[in-house]
Structures are given as structure tokens and as C-alpha cells.
Image 1 (tube, rainbow over the protein chains, first blue to last red):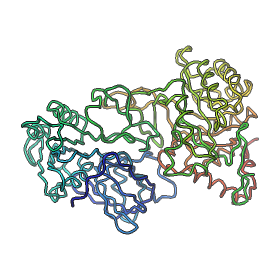
Image 2 (cartoon, rainbow over the protein chains, first blue to last red; image 1 turned 180 degrees about the vertical axis):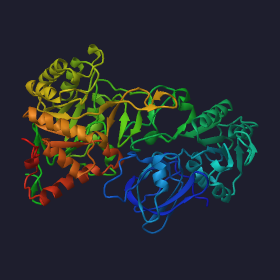
Image 3 (cartoon, each protein chain N blue to C red; image 1 turned 60 degrees about the horizontal axis):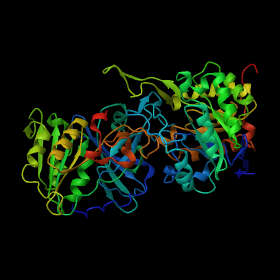
Image 4 (cartoon, one colour; image 1 turned 30 degrees about the vertical axis):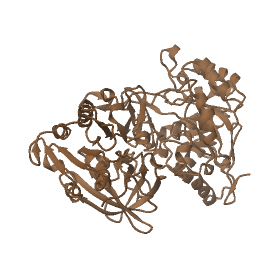
Length: 288
Length: 310
């Protein structure tokens, strides 16, 4: 399972647009779905990248309502000779994802990807804490999988209730520590995941900037959760990387719809400059 | 003569020679290079770059976009790199052999003229498109293209500021589009592009607030296509300068509709976001249509609509 840690700042693969055949599309809980797409010409991806998906690509006239494709984290990919099965975990929350959930094996889904930049990798020896909630869980699986062999990694999941969790078995199979907090206590400890992060970061953090003794937090989930994680990490002078989720029309830097406000003023684009950002660079106050 | 499958695809858009009638709309195609992974830009007649202002603009706070039935609203506020960075950095990155039309936007007429001057004489720029859908600060925020007198002054001033072919992109937020088209023709515009996004509002009933941080936005996409076809047809009845049809084009059949309604060329807009290679497919599809209809020259389709009673 342990693959090499990806290069710092390396070039991302050139994205493709393809009509991908649904291999599998199954419900895995009250609203969670697992989609496997056979994507011709898939160039591979790095942890943190995403793809734009639209269901209904098999129709002669493209469906126009809902109009926009949906940005989805690439969960993982399994590559054979000349094909790749790209796996997407998603939640059925609105009309776009309802259409996706209705896509049957053999039908086509339009995919554009991989898009965005990879997570910046941790420095050698850094201890990594990954915090995820909601569909943010899908954004961090590949990160956890790639780091599992090379870094001390711990994963923290937060959810309102057990049914909101996704992919717990997949993370357990990585054989890295996984702790869960649910607000109703239906899985793991009763409470919020940010409290788990507080306790995970307890202890000496002096020398955090020195290679081999530092720590790093990665977080993806609801804005309020990410903001709180950013505050906790900042207080302990731990580097925190937040992967943002937002609406976008294109995914490759043209519609300018996914502008995210920066502390220094101005905006970055989630699709082109992210989705992962140094959490300290985000102006959380102005983020809707 | 540009030929494909024996069909002459070349059109003349007010002095801009295009190898085929398919352009991409300003604001939906970035500075061109963003589409390199998906589309050989030389399959297009050309593209209209993102609107430029004298200084760079950072744009509106989020949320900037929202979905609407068969369309989307945006309020980006014309975020752009500014005219100098476009000339110095963006233009050289566009592959040779691609026709580039620069789009110009400003908040007062003199600044429009200044941007036009700056772009004139720059190699690679085949023409200008002046975006007349911007709020005119001195008129209390009304769009330049909503007042015939203000529009007339704008076109007259920018016409004097440049020797390049000059397209004026009209606002659809008017009662009489034909009158606005006539003003452009009278003041020396080489052609007109229409329509820009339709002013719109979408609301979240739970929060009782608009979906966009800006409040109002511009509606684009297939939802506005019949409005655009109507306005192109009305404008084409009123003026003899060429028209570039814009609004909700998703495929070649849609593009042909605009040609039939009197457009000499078309621009693909919102669909570029969803299907980043679509503009090339539209160009190919128009040729297939022409072959199927025994039409040797694409330009013979322009205005061929058989409208009842005409």
C-alpha cells in the first residue's frame, strides 16, 4: 500500500476529458455512494486532486438542468494496461448528485480531470494528523495511503452521527491509527473532531520547524471544522493544510467562480491554486 | 479560401478574417492557454479573450456563481490581469495561427479609449470587442449599452481611439435592441456581438438572501438562447454591419440557428466550462450541416431564416 511520497511542487498530469463508463455505483450508507468509472486515457493523479463529473453523458443532447458539472475529489485509482478505474466517494445531497446516483453500470459519465494541485507533502519525518469530515473524507484517502509507509500518520474523523461517516473500512485497512468523534456518540467518542485534534497535538511542539521533529495537520471538511482546526494548529505553531470544497463551473481556472479570500487581500482560485491551501493564508472570516 | 469537406468556411466579421465562424466568448475562455489540454485552438475561427481594464482587477467576493435552470448566474466583476500583463505575458503564450480578439471593459469612456489605444498596433490582435454591459459610474450605474446617447458617445470615442476592427458587445437588458444596434452602426462600429448575460437574481429562501454576494448577476447558458436568437434576428433586420451571435450555444445546430437569424459568426460561452472541447466540435458540426444541406459556403447561411410574413 505504501507508495513513494509525491514530489514537492512537481508538475501535475495534463488533465483529460472523457466519457467514462460506470463500472460500479453503489450506496454505502444513508447518503454515501461509491462510484467506479473506467476512464480511458486517465493520466494518474496525486493526493488532493479532483475531477468534474456530469451524469447523463450517454444522451445525445446533453442534459442542461442541472447545468454544471460537480467537483469531486479523486478517491483513488486502479490502473491496468490502457485503462484506469477511478473511484469517487460522494454524498447524494442535491439534484446533481441524485443524477449521478442514478447512473447505472454501463452508462457514461463525463469526467474532466485530474484538476487542481496536489497536497504539499510533509517534510521527511514529520508526524501527520489528518482531520476529515463529511465528503472531506474522500479528499484525504489517497493522502493517508501514500503517507502510511513513510510517515507517522494518524487520521481523525468527525461526523454528526455514524451514518454520516464514509469509507471507515478502507482507512482501517491502511493500518494507521484512526479515531472517530460523533456528536451523538453513535461511533467513536461522543464529541467533536476538533477536540480530538486538540488532544492529538498536546505535548511538546518545540522544534516543529526542524526536519524530523515537526508535525503537520491536513484537514478537509465543513468550513467551520476546517477553520477551528486551523486555529488549533496555529495556536500550537503547527503547519495546517486545508483542502477547500466549493461550487465551480469549470474546474480549470476560467470561470473564476471558486475565488477564495486570502489574508493578504485578494483571492485565490480553489480549482487552480488549490484545493489545498496553507490554512493560515485563508481569510476564514470572508469565506462564505 | 478556408475549406473543409469542400465547404468554404471563411467569414469576414467586420474586417476580421476568420477561418470559420466559431469564436469563444469573452470571460468563458480565459486567456486561451487554459484550454490547451482539451482543444487545439486552431480548430476555431478565433477567440475573444477575457475583458481587459487599464489596471488589474481582483473581482467580487464569493459566492460569485450560482446554478439556475439550464443556466448559471455570475458576478465576477470582470477580474482580469490588466491590459499590460495581457500584452506582455498572456498574448505571447497563445499559439501562432490563432486569431485573437481582445475585449475591453472600463468604468468611464476615456478609460475605455485608453485601453483600446494600448491594444492598437500590438501584433496578434486582430480586433477589439468593446463590452458595453458595464455599469457607467457617471450615469449612476446604468450599463453603457442601456442608454443610446451614452452608447453613442462610447462607440464614437473608442472608434477614434483605434484603427482595429471594432465590435461592440451589446447588453440584452434593453427594450429595443434594434435601436442600440443602429447607434453602433451610425458611430462606426465594424460589427456587434450580442447578447451579453441577462441581468438576473437568484435567492435562497432559507437565508432570505441572494445566492450571489453581489446580489445581482448575469444569467448565461442554454436558458438565454431563445432570447439571444430573437435579439440577433431583430438587430440583423436593423443594421447591415455584421453580427456575432452569442448566448447558450451547446452544439452545431444551435450555432446554425444564430447564422440563420442573421449572425455572421457565433461565440460559444458557458458551454466551454462544461465541455472544454465543445467549441471545436461546434466548428466541425457546422461543416457537416453545410454538407448535409448542400451549402457550399457557410456565409450563405447567414440570414437564411424563413420568417413568417417576410
